[in-house]
Image (cartoon, rainbow, N blue to C red; front, side, top):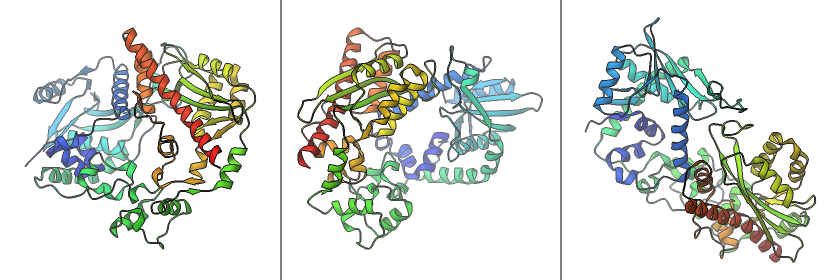
Length: 493
């Protein structure tokens, strides 16, 4: 069966041919998994960035759709030598693509392709392939393509006053890279068309040799014999070791030969898969906990990373800190006191966020977080934007303790952690009575998007109240979970 291979299909094929085949032949399988909030945010951000980029080409004309009508309209604009076209659609030899921006140069009678990317830089292992597919197709359609460019966000731009779109974006000419890549890409395009045209489904998929976080969306369907917790989940396993295990037919951690080369951390994880009792290095944990100075401040931030800088002092994808939760423990036997901050207005939360922190965190005591680089990074950004809080925020950083260290350093290893060290890996094992599953917001990506909806959208007061309450419940559990894990360790060590 001959099919049409779109640019999206081709890029999906490069990641995992079987996954792309399922999209074409078994769409119910491919679309069975609902998009995560993170994936939805990526799509929304891409659309937002593309709309902004088009404003730099005020004479551009837009073509809607991907159907025959859109292709005919494209041909008409090409024949008329329209200078700038947004989303022109081309189809030839079973390949289909819409170009973000196509510009005609009358002096050379040639075209430039500008691909818009919502990133701070060119992804060298991905973006050139994207452009090469388009260049190849347009040449098949008879166009003289002289330039292939990536238009991405400028990582050096910091907003001051009105958003200056001319400074927000950078256009990089990667024509030479694309031209060098063309022979390889065109060969892969033919292979993709042949593979995706097959009616017979092949077993498995290439993701079998990738770690869990790199598996395609249909991995479980294509590889039903791979257990939920497998060698793919071994921390930092690396491609060579993983391939060796898979080629030996080893999927379960308990089946890994004792002589198989693993790091100490990997060995501990593998050993835990068969040991009935967790590995608890009591002396190391006690030493860590004894470093903590009362009062203890269990602190967690929620932020929104905006592609187009929304406020002064921000660059592309710099985090807007909109919420924190804080549980304070004054002494070893005292109950935690909860403090919080949530900004629900449309202006910059930063000064209010910093002021609220200053009101609730004293000059002495350990500030406990989970994954120190995140909170410390936000504090340094806050200090740069609001130097009046520099001394205070610097003081916090000097007193931060990362509770995750106890688990990442493997002072406490449990088989049910499954190699993970996030708070959502540890909490269900150590404090099972606490759970995120009953909350309306269960992870940070959803919290971030809901705040954006709250602060940037025109929503009804009752919905605004509901979202606010859900955000408060989620962030509060983050810091109470840290307190509960700390207390579990303190009471048992």
